[in-house]
Length: 95
Ligand SMILES: [Zn+2]
Image (tube, rainbow, N blue to C red):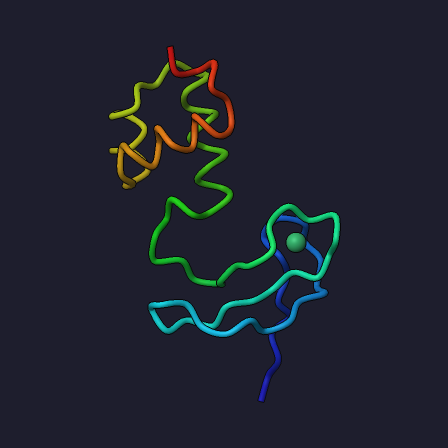
């Protein structure tokens, strides 16, 4: 059996332990890096809005003048995800 190293999508550390299963039945992992802001993650998200790269793209698109509905359509996520992400990451973009 081949072991694939699992790294945290937030801090790239490999100090990861298993952490039960998500409601969709996927293996959850727990990041043991104390400096990491993200503790629990799964490898294959069904909900793309949870991916750090998607959250970064939401903010980048808002800075470049894309509207909430534009961003949601391009990234195939809900407009509500776009709004809540912007509220958390950069409230000044929601004016
Ligand atoms: Zn981490």
